[in-house]
Length: 228
View 1: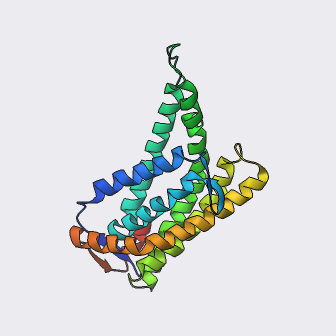
View 2: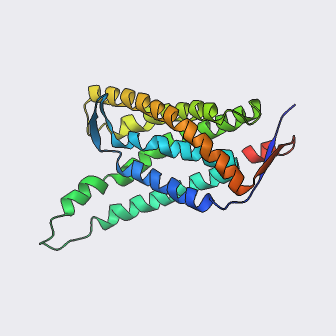
View 3: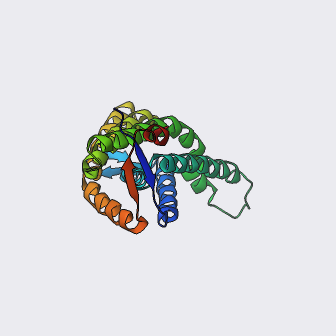
């Protein structure tokens, strides 16, 4: 017998969470070609930010449901493209001869549109797998163990994203040997972040459930609609 989930709740905190979700994703995209030297090796600075984005996605999916999370995801992706396109065209406008900041803008934001396009496939596949696994495991575990479900689903999503997107993003700024090292270090570091953030995220979910006064119940007819 299929077990289904319907969610009914207030959305007092959702505007703030949605804005934070967008800000973290934009930060991750802008820092995609910034390489940093750490104790573990060279990696993209975005690797220090992207786990927070996945955790936020898990929190929103857990508290507000799959449909709300999916709408937010696509809204953020579309806004990300708009931001990247605006940067692409605006930084190419002529500037006064006495202004010397053009090279800096080109270095930081010049390839943002390209990175956004490359990220699209990887981040979409990773998000869908993450969200589906989180909710399917929620049914199997009767709504318990969010921390464990989040680590598992986000971990799989981040590994997929790192292989599909991070390796391509750093291809033009690192050697082939460095790419393998960057992806490996990125995956290990992201998984470590997920483990550290899992318990605080569980507390946030509990607080949001109290604030939003949410109620969920299981029903055969509704889960297929919620997950569609």
